Length: 260
Length: 271
Image 1 (tube, rainbow over the protein chains, first blue to last red):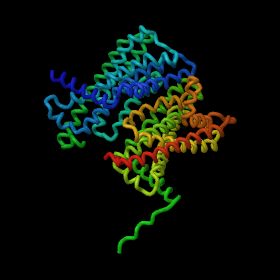
Image 2: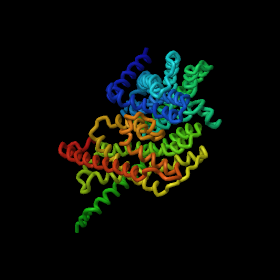
Image 3: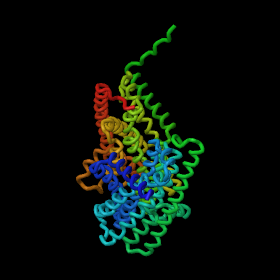
Image 4: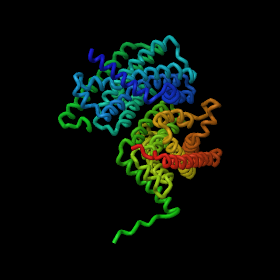
């Protein structure tokens, strides 16, 4: 009951923050248009190469990775929370700080689901490689799973940002660009040397995207890839919780909760 | 005996000192604020991403574009993001008041600061070339060094002009961050950073001509990609210069209006 209350209130807080930053018009014409342009930018490479397969590969990969991009913005929300000076109150609260911080960017998961869905539905049509509707509808829920596993990855990045608050945008950008580069978004994971493909294996998106592609192409092992994606997400969540606890334990010992 | 009053520098010398002072300030801020070095960290990742697509496709033209794209992205991000937020940043920290009452025009110190950040774009070009060479064994051959120097100079001018325009325009906006975010990928498409502008629908091409990146990117790629004669290069160079001057003029007018307005309304500082 208490956790549900924390989740509800933190989500309300997040959406209030979002309403403060965007109106529906600025979200659609500013943010959403920018995200759709990002997917189109990469998909056009396939068109320049006169390859429908490449166009579709890039459009699907870059639409799905939007879910990761938005989910990892939790990094900025948590860093702002610290800047507001509420940490000591959260730590002293009966539930503790971890549930609040873990829920602090959940609104980004929801907007990420919307953005990636809109991009996956519209951009392939725009670049001339429409996806079959039946398979598209089956692939969308898998993409939403990627939103949550990426969020868990973002929570781990929060641990880093809390220790180096001045590097918040840098950590966010490096975090999601690493996924964009190695997660099978633009080239298959097998393109990279073996040691880099090991890194790909533990990143969010990699297996979820394979599952999405398998559904869209009628390929095998959808369930296996989905389970791997969930396992990767659970792993990142554990690391994130551990990291947030360590940060506050150390802060309580040193008296540096407010100022790091 | 009271110390002698410092002699005020006049005319051209004053202008030069204002720009140089701005450049020195920007370089010190860059060194001391690691967050501002974002483009240096993201450039190699963009290079890896673009080059992986290009090398996998085996298309020579795309490989050349993939080497230059991260530097052009850095250039644009610096113009829109870092430089675009200069005056707004001064307003928040309370230093805009002092800059406005200084003898030199505000525009000059802003131009100096913008020029200094160009170092980052140049470094990101080096990073991208290193990723291409070490990571993918791609080596580019420079066929037209003089044209390259001219293109880089014109591009620097265009960046200064565009950044000073954004710097002034974003002061007026309450949602500057939103604009800064929104003005990335749509402009990478219009600027033909990775794929030729010719792929865009006909109705978008006039817009693309107004983005200096489309001219700069094409010329930079031609300097390395084409050993023969480069078509219409004086005209293309003139287009970059004209866009630079137009943006600079618009930036100067806007900045003068803003300086007058914040002085009149007493809103030079938000700190």
